[in-house]
Amino acid sequence: MGTVTIGVSIAVPEPHGSLLQERRAGFGDAAAHGIPTHVTLLPPTEIAEESLAAVEAHLGEVAAAGRPFPMRLSGTGTFRPLSPVVYVRVVQGADDCSWLQQRVRDASGPLDRELQFPYHPHVTVAHGIDEAAMDRAFAELAEYEAAWPCTGFALYEQGLDGVWRKLHEYVFGGAVVPPQAGHSERDTIASR
Image (cartoon, rainbow, N blue to C red; front, side):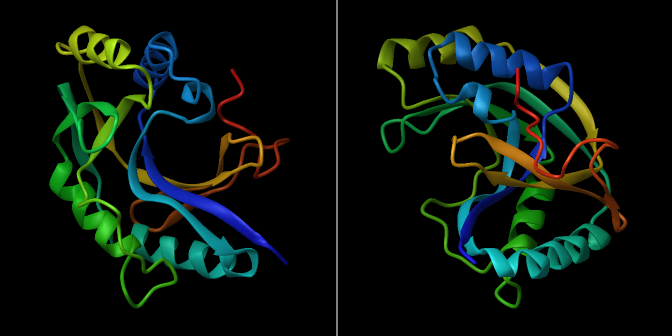
């Protein structure tokens, strides 16, 4: 058995997810269609393939302890010059996201890891593109607003093609949502 690269995130629901994904692509971010619009709880992490079952069980426990909470996005921010990222700000639900990501990475679980940067919940809308396009993303989405009830999170795997695919969705209270009938667990959700 080999390794897989996984991530855990809260999906930005429709119609907001597609709109922000299209805007990200429009700013020239080549990775836009391979990354569903999200708020990260666990950044890309390489694990042994045989650890996947333990990870899934751990995430089920995290979800069982979680409760729905309101999420609201408003305006833009940037990590520049430290990191070439422009994002839409999480202005409600940030504390809940912080609580979740701490439990996902809990030292007693299979996903214990240090982060490269302090955790800051956000929705990336431009990453690693030229400065003029980053400035445009920052300005054009400065008035952006979206809100929804967050009811869970999902586990994703990055394919060799760079596309992130949903493996499992976890609903707060402990339910695991199986893949849609007729689709494999590794079908892409970013096939647009």
